[in-house]
Image (tube, rainbow, N blue to C red; front, side, top):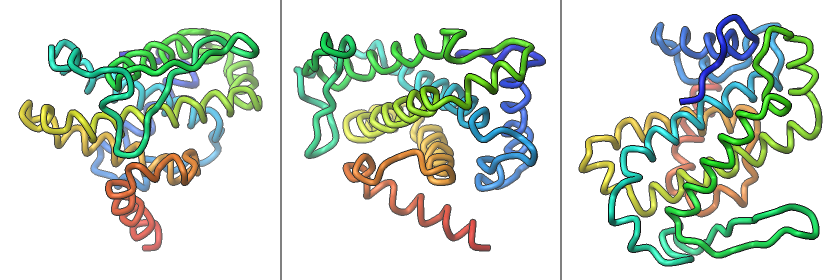
Length: 215
């Protein structure tokens, strides 16, 4: 997993969630912005933590030979095919890949963004870290990270839930996805059209979020 260096802004913000959930706090409390903290920094830290959740789940089955049986365009939620974009600007190309290959590419791409100190600073200079986190470019990058993580969850639920159930990993998957969806709902990080392929899963979780929020 990708770590937060001790004593940094990222490490401090990460600690809030651990403390809330560790003390038996609700998911609504765990995703809420702590008083006096930066919303942009809070989203940045969760992008990393949710990446770690997804990559840990995927690592359990990444060696399964069954993954090689998927052809380009196969393994996605019903009615959609997520394509991978390579390059940028005029050189950008979109390619059709299988769902497992798409997941591998997403996880590698997110790791590359997070490991780039110019995009995800993790040093002792909080002011500099916040300056980066509060730019429009960073907001756009985080939006892309959260959308792609949602797509990975969509693929896992559509094509690999049975495998994870057999490995007794389904409860962990469900807990991670619920936490992810509560956070995305709290901060409006996912467009409605992005969530449509998983509506049957998303709708009850969002209902739970709003019911708890209304109390």
